Length: 301
Ligand SMILES: [Cu+2]
Image (cartoon, rainbow, N blue to C red; front, side, top):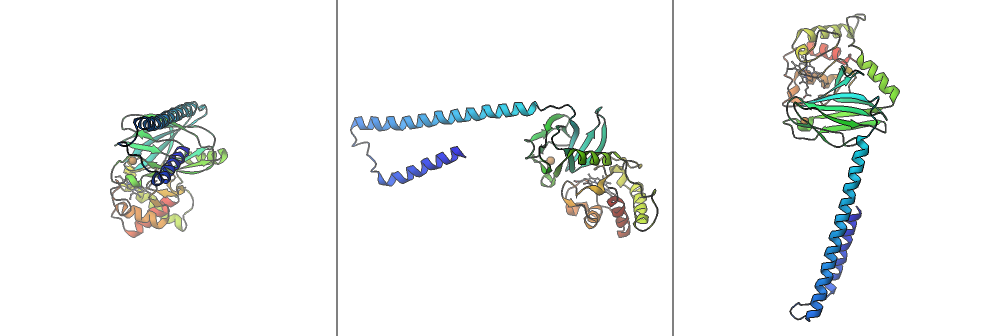
């Protein structure tokens, strides 16, 4: 800002002075004055160049120092997440203390405030870029290679993340949220995610529950289960997001669709109309079946 302001002020001064000053014609100027004129101009150019160089080198130094202190964040007791970018959604696998995947979520990450989070980044298809502007700079996600990033949220809140590398048709509809929670809220969220999915067959059979049970049976017997995992059931597909606790997410399909019954129904019957090019196929289900699926999935909190 200071450099920008200085340049503008210099420009304004020059513009203000130009019309008032009779420009000396070099052909009529005495040689002495001409040399003096050139010398002053040369001094100004030289001075400004040196000043620019000094400023840039200072900024470079500050940048390197900041980078170094960021990479020295203490990472004991860090939360570990494996992020895999897909066309066009994000899969986040949370690891336990021994580095084994515990549960997976999509579109919506939770991290504890004030505790470092080690994120391993990779991609299954093309190059994507992980970018949560309020938490860290961009980092490429490369197929077949794993890179690492340490992030830490110092303030509670929701931070939006985006894919920052053009990756195909739905690149612009590939977002996610990072929710930074106070440690106890984070611990509750984590415990809830670790649990297997609710099973509508286990608790009573009235009202919505009949629908939910029908939805579950449909889900497990149709193609859904071949692409989606619901922990605690036989559904163990891995082409689409893990749906074990999908009912608790605010957004679906990488931030494209709000998680409400009507939108969820529209998504299940025709994902292409909401996110053209998405790799989930449209289904030929009857409205009744869609409703049952929506009740079942909506209840998976
Ligand atoms: Cu992408």
